[in-house]
Image (cartoon, rainbow, N blue to C red):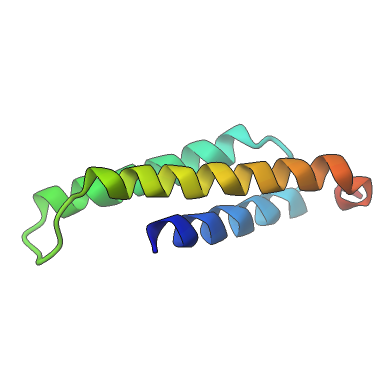
Length: 83
């Protein structure tokens, strides 16, 4: 679930940035990665029924990375996308 959620979230966040003529993918990846890591840190410190999981961070980063790959391919293969 983490993988899919972060893939979709990061992809749409990248599309949102593209609409503002910002085509750099590094800020998109860093934002997605920091968001996933911060969620796990909060789960560790907050008194809830949730627990921080190292594998969740890995799934978040993999989903974010795959979304970045999709965005990169979209920018390279569809030149009209930048217009």
